[in-house]
Image (cartoon, rainbow, N blue to C red; front, side):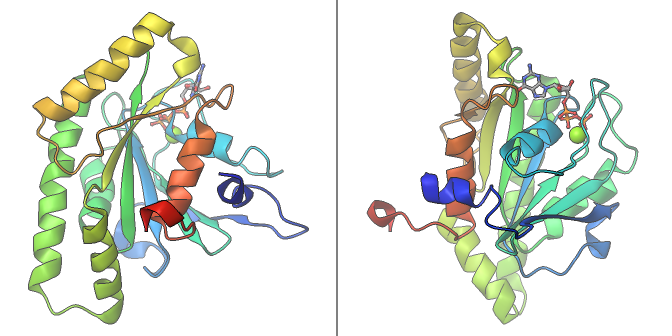
Length: 241
Ligand SMILES: Nc1nc2c(ncn2[C@@H]2O[C@H](COP(=O)(O)OP(=O)(O)OP(=O)(O)O)[C@@H](O)[C@H]2O)c(=O)[nH]1
Ligand SMILES: [Mg+2]
């Protein structure tokens, strides 16, 4: 865990965390040779805050958050020491951008270096109707991704990512956010509702255990950081390999 958290901190004078840009669709994004993970979730669930909190140790990291739902309008890509990319997405649901389909959906369907999608769910409410739509979309995309990938002549890069992607088997993970705001009883209820939500949605591509985080007090962030370092191929865990 210590090794992983170093990736999210300053080492010497080196600036490790770089904002690459805001993109309206995947076709104009930087080229696809760095492992990538993305955060999706309903507007206001805490996607941008989570990203900012994970890099709170690095001065001058600027990730914009807001009380108003629908704040993030474009896909914002951040580069972490050329080891991996993190992508902050516009939220779905209330005040979502009109171009959601051509941006977020198109990105999820076409991005070859995308290794893991983190679906954020508010711990104070548990999954809402929009999350049901989103998880169905994710399942459909996972199938399209794998079939599409296997049916075309792949480049060496595609093969590398496809192998990693299919080895992982569970490309979607749930993250319960704002746990500092949920009373223990509400938190247990939310954890159970996420497990039920996964089962009912038959989301076979979804990892069964949700991560529990607070961007306000930092709880749970180290686990998520370690997991991101691991799935992007930047952390060897002896007992798992
Ligand atoms: N108490 C608490 N508040 C949080 C937490 N995470 C986010 N918030 C608050 O929730 C609001 C929305 O946070 P954002 O990070 O902007 O949410 P988002 O998912 O990026 O929203 P959109 O960009 O609109 O889709 C802000 O007022 C944050 O301060 C958390 O862990 N605890
Ligand atoms: Mg945001």
